[in-house]
Amino acid sequence: MKLSIPKPGFIARLSARERKILGAGLLSAFLFGALYFLLFPTYDKVKQYPEQIAQRTRLLQRYKEVIAQRQMQQQSLDTTRKRIVELENHLLTARTTAAAQAQLQGLVNDLAKQSQLQINRSDFLPKKELSKDYEKVSVRLDAVGTINQITAFLTAAKEMPMFVLNDDLRLWSYSSLSEGWKKSKQIAATIVVSGVIRHE
Image (tube, rainbow, N blue to C red; front, side, top):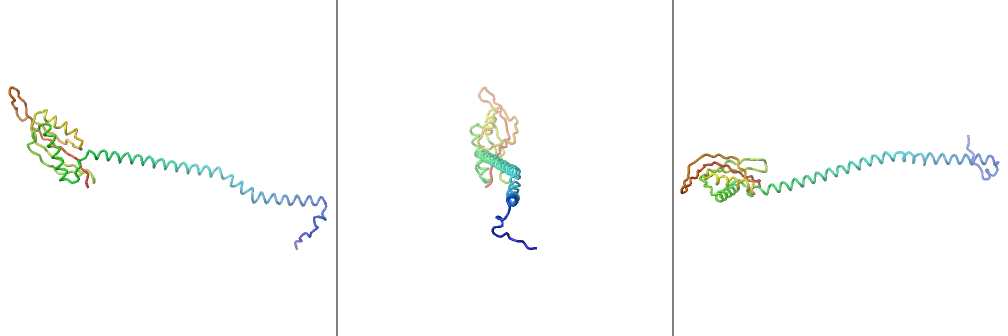
């Protein structure tokens, strides 16, 4: 079966009714093509817009949450770093055990002088590792003085800006010291004073 191509003048030979039918057919074909190839795909895409918008909104919300968490973590990290710096300002400034022991001995001698406490003997105790970054150095003192002198020494040690710890304290009556008509009871004390250093 061969398809015949309308010759020029074909439409002119059609009746008015046939022309209307042909025009309606062409219009229907055009509308069908427009619907099938343009409108339906566009409608399908438009139908997906609400879901795509919802997905992108959820994704954007997740990004915002991640950014907020990161900012909170950064703020927490900054606060922690500041706190570490603040605490490390209270450590002994020495970075080796020997230097820290010498620094601690100097602090102890200054405190004893201020409180007029007599130090008869001082011994360094073995260092103690607190972590991979920090260690504790300690000195044990055998001291003699009045209760006021010992109290003054302990109070000053507690208020030291350096991170000095009073780890151990033992007291016992020593003797009575006469000052004219006054008698003052002497007390022997064993005191362990410690400081913390950061390794190099």
